Image (cartoon, rainbow, N blue to C red; front, top):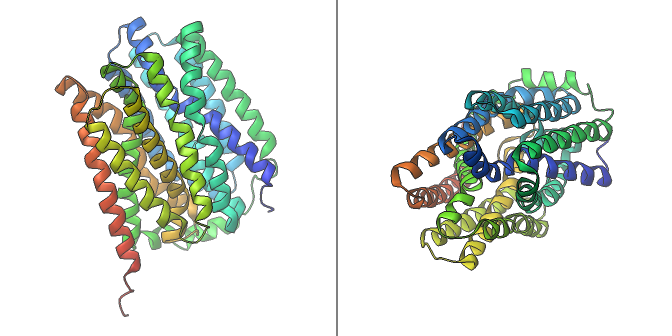
Length: 397
């Protein structure tokens, strides 16, 4: 099976940009107008999000197995159409219960269309060129927040949140057709070979290694940092007296900072890419959340935090796509990656709801900001342990 061309990889990256912007980043901008119009609580909205992310976590290994068996095209097209249907329900949203149900479907769609599925597909298709392809995809898709934070705010201001949801449904349908054209000829291929790999115990072999469990913990910490920040940064900054337009402006810096962080990886080369990205990501997160906890007022301080957070999240995305192959093995990547990534998605699921309750108990975001700084410190410690276990010689016998 020939690898995707450079042009096809760029097109795939553009599709990922839209899928991330519509199905993930836009949620935090919807919170305030939905609270105002419907009278729902922030906890109800974030509970639905967390339930959807929980479904995404549980579905990860299954979706990875489908992609290992050569069904990546059907998975990603089907996921985009499922997301479109859920956005139609979103536009209706008569009750918190219906909103919860649609997020269960949207969570399953996340497991089929976002980075976990995309990375598994690229590892299968590109083989030794997967790290370079993943870097290119994330360079383009890193602008998802830059494009969709202000775009979503503009649409909400001028069309309302229900019409915006319908527009996002149409975008998902468009991405499904684009993926169907781009990934032609991929289904089903290498199914027998991938089934043999799985039957040979790739997952069992990986789970015997301490790196498997350390990566699971590392990705869980990164997942909770990412989801809490993305979904609570807007109200956090507004609590610190930034206007909605200023918040949208500084949050738009996250995308370019993600891309800038990923551009630095081009100087690293493919050898040891996960090691270098992990170290720099841990540093950026720790310094950024230290700044956030200083509670320095103003747009400049908020913008600097967004830049540091963007650099850290951009590098951690590269880490997420390359660490399993580098620290464990590419064999049975979809299944192994799905299980390693499950704690991360569970953490992303729990994070927004827990943060909303912490905000409620503390009557503000100070405790949330402190918790994120502690998590950033644990990221650095866990990554250090991962490097240590990898550098130790294997025991005799």
